[in-house]
Image (cartoon, rainbow, N blue to C red; front, side, top):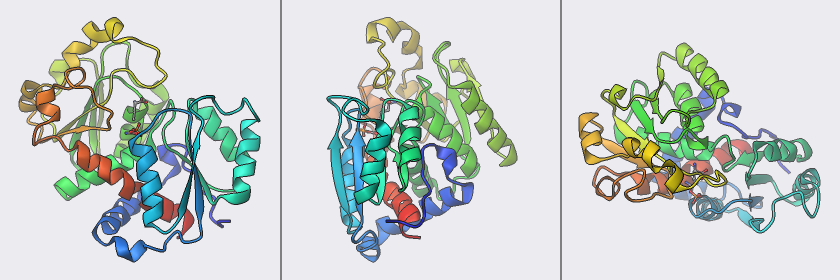
Length: 306
Ligand code: CP
Ligand code: NVA
C-alpha cells in the first residue's frame, strides 16, 4: 500500500504549487510517455461509477495501463453504493487490495465517507459539487494553447454546476481570470464563490459572477457544459427559454473575441452550443478529452509515486 495518503475530493485538496506541478508533469508525460511506463508498476486502482461515463472511465483505464498499473472497473450504475453494504465497508475493503480509489458518485458525502474508511487515497472523478480531474485537463489544455495561464481570461457560460465550481477553484489557484455567466436561479454555490474569490484576491486574478449576457466583455476562451447535469432532474422543456440566451453561438464567440471554445462533454449540438461552434476549428473539445488522461496520470503519479 502507498505511504502518501493524500486524497483529492475537491480542487482545494491540491495546493497551488501541486496544481502547477501536475500540469507541468502532465505535459511532460504527453511528450515522453515512455519515461513513465513503469510508474505504477504493481499498483492497482479501483475506479467506481455511480453515474454514467465515457471519457472518465476510458481515460482512467487506459491511462493507468500506460503507467504500468492495473485498473479495476466497478460498475455501480444499477444501484448506488450503500445498499448491499455500507459505503464505509466498501472503502475499507477496497483498501485491502487497491492502492487508490477513483470514485464518481451522486453525492460528495459518499466521497467523504469513503475517505474516512479507506487507508489509500480517494480521487473524485465527479460528484454533485466538483469535477477536479476535468479542471486539471482543461487548464492543461489552456496552458498548451497559450503557453502561460496567468492573466488569461476564461468565460464559463451556462448552468452553474460541478464543472463550474472546479474551474473557479482551480482557475483562481492558477491565476486565471474567470467570468461565470449563468441564468438567474442557476448560479454557482455561494461558498465556492467565497473560496474562489479569496484565492483570486491573493493571486492577482479576478472572479466575475454575472447573469448579464451583455456584461461578458473580451475573453480568451469560452467554456460550456450541458444545461442539465446527471441527477439534476430538470427537463429541457422546462429550462429551454431561460437558457437559450446563454447558448454559445458564432456571434457570441466573435463579439467576445474568444479564440477557443471549450466543453467537458458530453455536448449537445444546438442546445448549449451551436453545431457551427462545436464543430469549428476553434473548438478544442477533443484536446480536452485527450488531456483528461495525461492530467489524471500526472495526478496519480503525484499521489502514488512521488
Ligand atoms: N467530461 C466527462 O467527465 O465525461 P464523462 O462523463 O463521459 O466521463
Ligand atoms: N455537469 C455535468 C458534467 C458531465 C461530465 C454533469 O454532472 O453531468
